[in-house]
Length: 482
Image 1 (tube, one colour):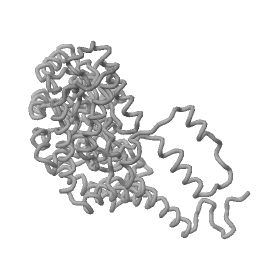
Image 2: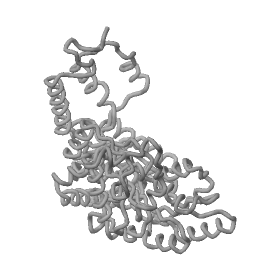
Image 3: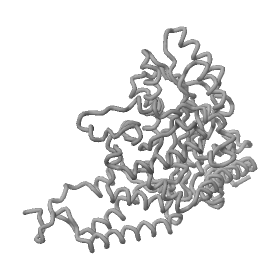
Image 4: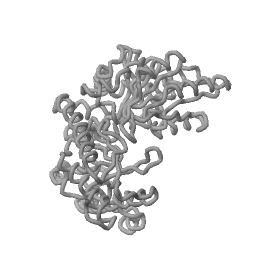
């Protein structure tokens, strides 16, 4: 059967009325979801076996009813996932995009922008330069600074470390330094670059989970004595585990003394710099050679919106610019930026529009206030934990993250049973749908962890979750609350 419709159109086309009807239906569904988000479970999943039974089938040769296809997506696919923008989704690092950012994503997709070269995306590329300059000014980088939007923090960390390698002249046997709280994507980036795990130094941290700078100096000196080539030191501006921020100003000084590239991973925490509290915590970040940011985390954008900022865009472009013959038409001079020259993607979408639209429509003050509110809620959670006879604080509230466990001191639970108890508490709360929580390990101890970063979250959401932890722990111990 031909795929050409009777009216001569391709079988891949839809008429205008049908497109509008489907588009309006989708918008209505998304808005309805947002309006009732807090009433739904914070998480819902399914096993591979269950979902294969539900969804596995061959691709249909003939078209199916569009409304029926959408209904299946609404009912059978989309609900089987973490509701990461739920007001009680406190696991990992949440993401809660704004409505203008969703509209920006829709427009960028609908206009199908290719933004690898200026030739094919002059307006979008200029807008990305504008947004990158916003970020540059917030971070107080010099005029030579700039950046590129990426798929996320992992890609940004990779681009940053590759830039460091090229800046250093691609030395043999390079060594990369990060703390024991450094993100796994840094080690993955090193592996992609050909730096084996044994040359990724995990420097111990102090009681506040900040890199031990004396240990860093010793590691650098030891590697030089062994004939290796120290390349880059990576600092945290909001470690995923605890929210900890390294002493960035002191790290910058060491990097300069040792002629190392200074990279700061501020993927989730970086936008706290819009608050006075964040500015104080990140003192020294302006001295970094490269900085990773994730607007899809604490700047309330949809996935995939990451970013790498650099101190000098010429160094970044020197690391990535390649001009094959088939792109000779795109060589329009240095004034026009080809964003393919700033990273690993030639084919890349128009990511800046959603950021620009959300700031334009909502105003920067709303973002500042939402970030500060997250930090305030985490501090209230810490105070609740400290005041409780049943909860034990394992990591103070820092940049929206607080770590704790159920551990009534009068019960004197042995470490193995204590871990099992807290794992059971987590499983019970997640399974109930009340809230989504994750866990981590701090100094080897199993810890429950709340990451409070959703502009929808209220103190009632946080306190309800903490009270549920207390109630579940008491019940699992088989006793009444003391």
